Image 1 (spheres, rainbow, N blue to C red):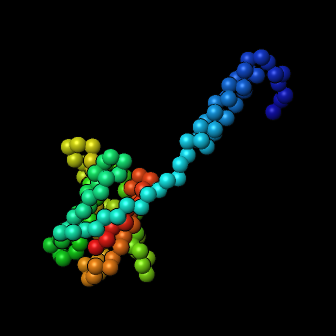
Image 2: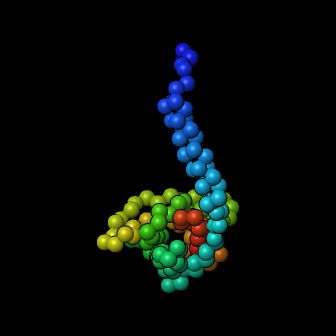
Image 3: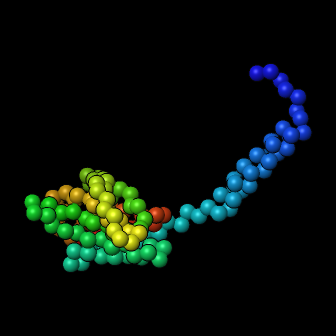
Length: 136
């Protein structure tokens, strides 16, 4: 690359880009908050709900015709993986998404067959920046 003479226009361009980058870095550093809340939701009569950032997240557990269980998460926010707290570790991703009339969507998780065998099952689901603990 050949050396070019530093012109006034090039210097202004470099200073503007550096100012934007430094400002963005400072903004994200000051604005950053790692306040992850752990919310609890106990499934009673097949459903529970919790409020996250002023929006209601509804969770329903339904039996299917083949006696398998699915968990429906009705939320404005996109949920992450559903993780079982215990051994062996089980991680389930959502399979299908259904759009509703409002802004909410329904995310479906197919649960393992041994979920309804006891009430000691605890699942973790990350929604937005919060962690939702679901107890059966």
